[in-house]
Amino acid sequence: METKKRGSFGGSFGFVLAAAGSAVGLGNIWRFPALAAKDGGGLFLVVYLVLAITFGFTLLISEVAIGRKTKQSPLTAYGKLHRKSKWIGGIACLVPFLIMPYYCVIGGWVLKYFIAFLTGQGAAATDDGYFGEFITDKGQPVIFTAIFLIGCAVVVFMGVEKGIERFSKVLMPILFVLVIAIAIYSLTISRTDEAGNTVTGMDGLKVYVVPNLDGVTTKSFSTTVMDALGQLFYSISVAMGIMITYGSYVPDDTNLVKSVNQIEIFDTLVAFLAGVMIIPAVYVFQGVDGMKSGPALMFVALPKIFAEMGTIGNIIGTLFFAMVLFAALTSAISILEAIVSSMIDRFEMKRSKATVIETAAALLIGVIVCFGYNFFYFDAKLPNTSPGGSAQILDILDYVSNNVLMPVVAIATCILVGWILKPAAVIGEATKNGEKMGRRLLYIVMVRFIAPLLLLVLLLFALGVIDL
Image 1 (cartoon, helix red, strand yellow):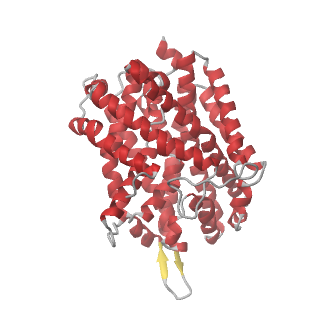
Image 2 (tube, one colour):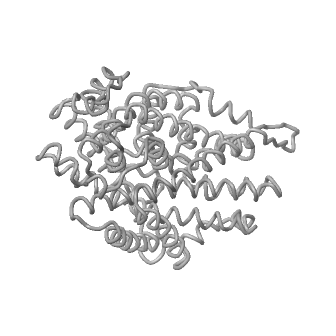
Image 3 (tube, one colour):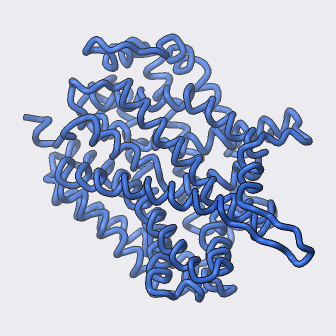
């Protein structure tokens, strides 16, 4: 009766698409290409891939197994596994609560640009100051944030199978097709400068995939590893309660190892293709320097590039922001579900009530985040702020949740699974139907020793305690 009340996925396909939809978010679209461009292209890709099949697999299967084993959301799952570990669940639930408001604000920005290109106003988005004028406006960002948030709330309100699973089965294939189509088009772009030199999208692809070892030192390589680790950590949606929540909806006869492998492949493939979409196009029009602009890449640099493409640029821009909007929605829905599910399990609320309460809270905080660029504007310095840079409310929430709390949750999870419950608890859950776990020994070594050590270094690096 408990599983029926909480809801469940209809099968492994729905679970994989929903989990992949959570993993494929805004970070994959702009952060992955920017880091790849900064850290030697193919070198970053190789490091990321190695970490994905070791570190990523370890955290992902641990959380999914915890969810299915307890049939609980993060707030209550840890306590059910080990009474003294309830506090981990509290922090794991706090993370999505902090992320949801500002993620919806950014989702509102994406929605604004999608509508601009859809209505043929993409050229206006290329004006200098367009993005700044929009986010500092006192009304528009709030409206777009509310629309985006309500869209997420409707899907979560409908439940697991009728809402999240059905939504993912429609949206994820469309997103994947759009990513492939834009990536292919990006490779066909070319531009001849005034000197007669022609630069093509294939030239940009080489910059992206061929490892650049020029000037690589121990320090720069360590930075690349930390960048790849931080990106992977954020990308696969661990340490924020999402995978525990989705794992709790997975039927007992589902092959967890196979499903986790599929999620890994899908997420890594989309992250890679995001780079193929963006880096060749940016390289053609703005060179290597244009690829390192982070969030500005999506809202400032790319609209200008679409404009330079001529008439087809507005079409490509529309498709691109539609794809980014879909990615943002699937991720935001999973973040909201982690909180709603926790409220259902801990306080025995109805889904409808829990969804309304959390939506209202996220909207209130989201409005404060929007006002962080006008009414509540201030400059703050964070340990990871670039020289000359400043942080606002959105940046602070992002730093606390992603750079501090998520590593703490992940380290605590590794200690719980690796040393208190022992790895056999997760391995037993993942193979309880007779499945084989090919990376069994790797998992044991990773969860007990390597993963917590890497996470500790990542946390100290983010806090500014160590400087690689």
